[in-house]
Image 1 (cartoon, one colour):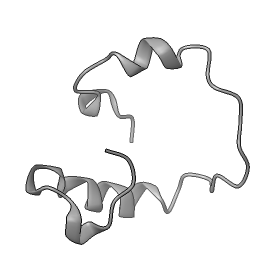
Image 2: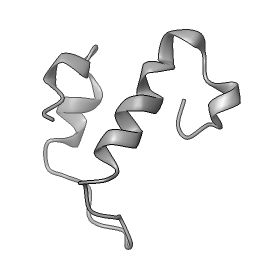
Image 3: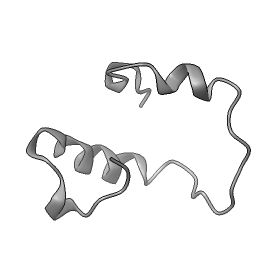
Length: 55
């Protein structure tokens, strides 16, 4: 799943709304496309990345 409206978010994902509201205040806007990060393929296979989120 990628970007969805809040009303369509599964209940077990509702915590992301608060996290997004908080982090969007300090993280920069993405205004242009960048190259894929060299480690993207490795991270695509990692499950449960939430504990690794740095805030």
